[in-house]
Length: 324
Image (cartoon, rainbow, N blue to C red; front, side, top):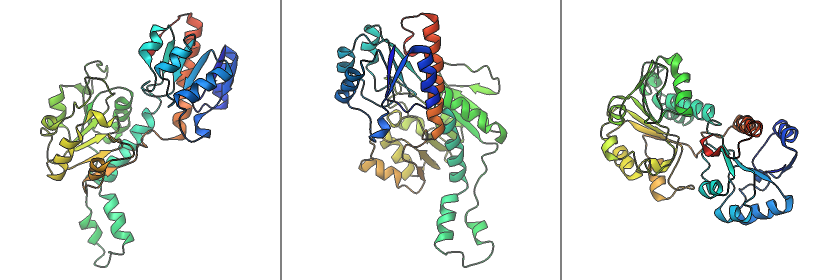
């Protein structure tokens, strides 16, 4: 089998695929600084005469799949295969695999880092120091920037998949209590309390949004839920922007109905006017969609993908689909 890989894929991972499957043609999208378009991808598939594809951000559209219906599989090195026409691929008998936990550690670490940064007023303190405002007494900063500890806070998870569970493990040493809403999963860990959605929002000190994009989750987090939050609570969204109604969040932030928000994703990237209004609120800590941006994430997706593909090869199953 000949596999075209356009995702970033380390040398060891490519070697293991060669040993298991045959030839590997490596054309990472990173060499050109952007994902391949559907036309570019079709050209690469044609030139390489590939029997399978491993992609990351490239446009694996219906046109691509219609043009190459005999692919054995499509591997998607992402948390969700949102750039692939999955339904058509399944109809054509093409197995589709993805790597849902590849960035869980990276996202969880930034979650902890930025929640602490926000709660300890670190950014304001640094700015105050750099601007030379420490001209009063030795204790001026101590009084000005006194914040809160993460320890002992109640964290409410909306969605308790790989990211939510990794956050829960990381904050274990902070003695945080964990509650979660997830209609599709029940944790075997009795220290984590499964509750309804309203309870998460009404009781948590920190509400962590960890949702995929589905028809059910689009706009799920709205003014009614945000209104349930405690005045000193934080909302953190490191999943997808579309699951939160941004106008409702902005209204709560501007009117200081909640303490603030920590956001890594936006309805428009680059941000539009409304996104920028949210970003520049004084009670917002915003980052430019970097929660999963670590070098290690690429190694994680290689390991996850290789394990799935080799198991699939050994099992003889034709299509394990995205349920992997």
